[in-house]
Image (cartoon, rainbow, N blue to C red; front, side):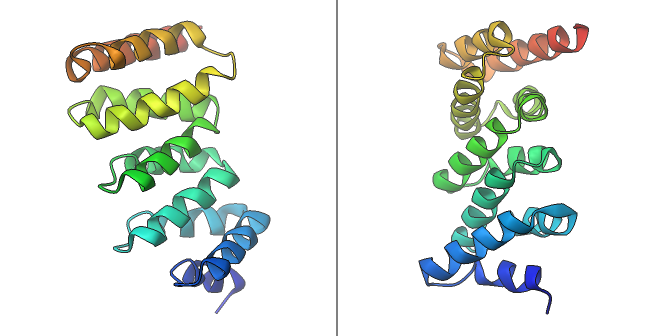
Length: 163
């Protein structure tokens, strides 16, 4: 078993110290193999493994994981979705594009809208694309986010691509 495989397996440990040590080892290793292994763990049946995978991907912040983390923002466990949203926010433009694209397709889920809102609020702090982010946040905070957010996200994507 490779060190990466061992660390991935340890994310399922009942011992929090073991999980944290595994997460730190995976973050230190980074790389293609680690990121792809963690992406696979985002759909593990155990909530704790999904959370650890999302947290580790968040700390690595490799843009390759942006879309898988957006999918994890749909997780039925709100803490997993929240950590995934934070991870996407750390990815800059690839994360922003992934969240906006997700909103054009998944705004029917109020839970996804909440996670997207959280991610966009964190992204806004970077000072980039603030105007577009503000418009999408306004739609998410409005009376009918399931109806207005996809349109606002689509317009934001068009504006960003036009630059």
